[in-house]
Image (cartoon, rainbow, N blue to C red):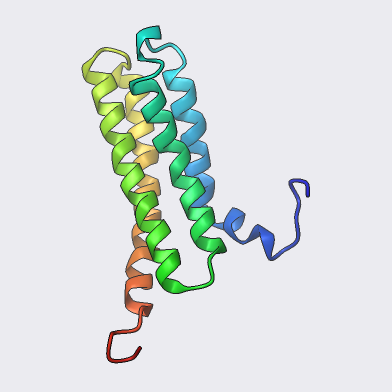
Length: 133
């Protein structure tokens, strides 16, 4: 199946949080391209893996059938976003990123975080209480 897919399959691709998270992945890859070679299997790999985890978990959660599963994956995506921010701040402290590169990354990360907090709150409210189960 190509990029198009049918309308049902596109559900996660229509989510602004997923779209912005995909943008963030590209930004992280670009920003980390010139990090020191000795970081290839360290900070560079960790930052990239955490970045990829955000849209991947949004997509996987959207593909699940239940509210609890979706909430679980969106929560993992939010945790990975916090991990990315930490990696980026470390890269800044280590001199791998200058402020002009770091700021847009942190701004995009904050935007994705805001976009995830809404669904997390709604999903928590939609979860049945133990008495309802």
